[in-house]
Every structure is written in structure tokens, then in C-alpha cells.
Amino acid sequence: MSEENQAAENQPVFAIQKIYVKDVSVESPNAPQAFLEQLQPEFNIQFRNEARGFDNGFYEVSLTVTAQAQVEDRTVFLIEATQAGLFQIEHVPAEEMDPLLGIGAPSILFPYLRETVSDLTTRAGFPPLLLQPINFEAIYLQQRAQQAAQQQAGTEETTH
Image (cartoon, rainbow, N blue to C red; front, side, top):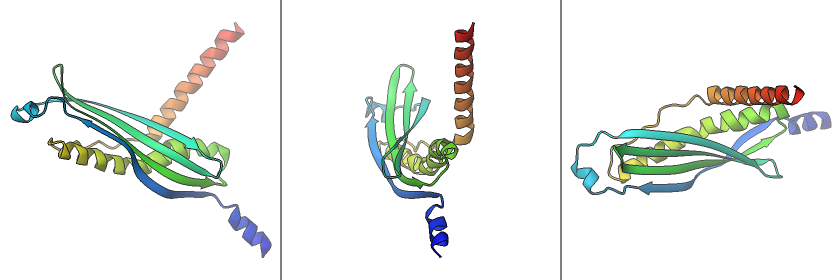
């Protein structure tokens, strides 16, 4: 019986402990003039994902979006929002940790971030900004390929 208990204790754990808004900033520097004009802004949207671990098997993963709407050289609005989650991760093989933190957790956080941004744009007096789905796996694999290419280039430079 103790072998079964020990086996159960060593099972991989990936559990959401908390999802929360960590930081929010909304600027509409040209309000109320922006509301009086028929604007067709261009959007610049950038994402950033960060993860940090704690000693007790908990990890905070945060997904940040910076969304700027501009017409010519005028900023219509600028929103920066960080959605974060506290995840318990235990007994997971080392080679699976990066994908969990770079793909799994951000995929869980993204719908919450999308809702936050949509709500913020509406509360700022603008039509909702709906963030399009993101393929976190493709981004993760692309970043790994770039890192491998950079390491390969660095190795070639030092061996010649």
C-alpha cells in the first residue's frame, strides 16, 4: 500500500492556483476629441510572456499585452495589461517545464487577458478591441529554433 501512496505522490501536478490582473494602464491622451471624430486607427499590438519560480513548486506566469491605437502621429489610446497566474507544478520532468511555462500557462491566461483588454477599451469609451488567438506553441518553437541557431553561430565563431 505504501508503494501505491508513494507512486501517487510522485504523479505530475499542473494546477491553477490563482488567475489575476497584475497590472493595468489605460491612456487616451486625445479624449474627448477622439470621440468626436470618425477615426480609423492603426493598431500596434505586442505581447510578452514571463515566468518565475518559487522554492515551493509554485510558478508565476504573466502575459503582458501593449496595445496602441494611432491615427497618423496621434495616439488614440494606449493600453498595457498584465494577466498573471499562479501555478503549482510538481514532479514534472525538466524537459517538460519550459513548454508548460511557455505554452500551457500562457494558453490558459490568454482568454482572461483578451477579456480584460476588451473591457478596458469599452470602459475607455472605444469599441472593444478583440485580441486574435495566439498559437503559443508555434511562437515557443520559433523562439527555440532561433536560440539554437544563435548558439550554433556562436559555436562556429569560437571554433574557427
